[in-house]
Image 1 (cartoon, rainbow over the protein chains, first blue to last red):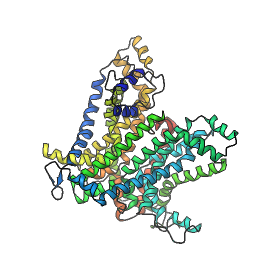
Image 2 (cartoon, chains in turn blue, red):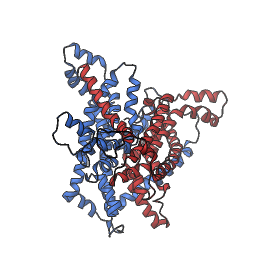
Image 3 (cartoon, one colour):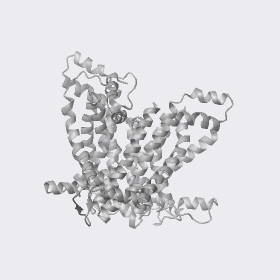
Image 4 (cartoon, rainbow over the protein chains, first blue to last red):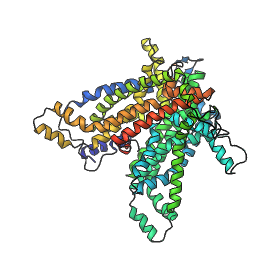
Length: 314
Length: 267
């Protein structure tokens, strides 16, 4: 840690420090990068970035937030006058509350599936001395370079009534009737798990690598079974870092639009889908802004929680 | 977990990860136009019959992705260097500002730019939404924080004494910046640029909300086409995108190493 940077961060708010962690990540101990022998006018170098970010991000988000307190006056028209009506409506009507609830349930299902699937792979990749390790890492990272739409697209023929998954399940005698796996909650959960799994694996590899492998060997030598070693040694030791990854994947899955749209067939109404319907089809711009503000707040809360978690994990 | 059960679990997860990608490629050669498994015969027909509007969409996607990557890399590098060399208070607040789009769901960025466009009509009498420029603006907002993080991660490994040595040998600060600092930061800048390019080619929500209905980027075209019909043509154009990605991946893996390239993504 850079002494200067730490001292500066120590004086700012907890919020600023949490976000600062995001920036300081990857700084090795004893690193000296805040030293600046050049003393160029870096402020001018960064000014265009600040202005552009304000114009295309900060101001639009502020406009969005302000419109969430207005009221719709018909399609594509907003009436002036500050009101909390939209927020009251969202949290008092069971239907909208249900949309938010379903979004969070989907996120929890996806993140749990990701943890279960990621652990064995991450453990294997963190501990293996195989000379093919690089190739296996390649296989984990490679899907991230392919568009989510295309990765989801592969699931469409696989999950259809007479597709590969049902064909396999019928052939193995697991089911008698083909299952409905597409255009419903199941399909969306499978697609999201698939697209977010690499992030969870990469997070867990880093977490498991930090656990001293002699602790594991000690447990095994003292007579613990491999399963006991996992559940009583590795799992507790990786919990802080795991929670960080858990919250990151949870945030990504409640924010996701593409997968619910493609594999949910407009029948799975999660918050991002609902917002898009209001903006593009119902043309209720103020109401859409309110729903977007609520999604944004949820994402911010989860991100800050994950940052404070990864702070503790260090 | 015994050794063999671990291996079985790892194999199953790898199959789960890679099968859908493989399936797109396989379906693009399938002679039957239905979703049934197993396919009965293979053909190259779908590649010959890709409708021209898909190529149009691919062209638009690249027309948006390349400026996005260039602009966000230039701006993001400036911001990252500013953060890394910040002296005095306010560093955390400044980096929080630069990285704040990371917390915002892409769909919300799309809605915000859409609403801002309407507001601009009230203020200035013109509304940029519906043009490629509005999509580029949204994609820059998505990509900028990732570039900042990639360059910062590279800067952390940068040895400041190199700059001192160059100064002592008589180089001007400007010369040092272009001949020592920038080359040393290049790996981080490159991975930021590639990530920005991929992010732009991947995005659906921003392009859908801010773009025009009749002039769609490729991911949006695939999504909206799939909403009313399935055709193996989609598989063919998607398979072509996969071949492109594979080529890029092999190239990057040889040049930089994928693990290093995307090390900054996890956190």
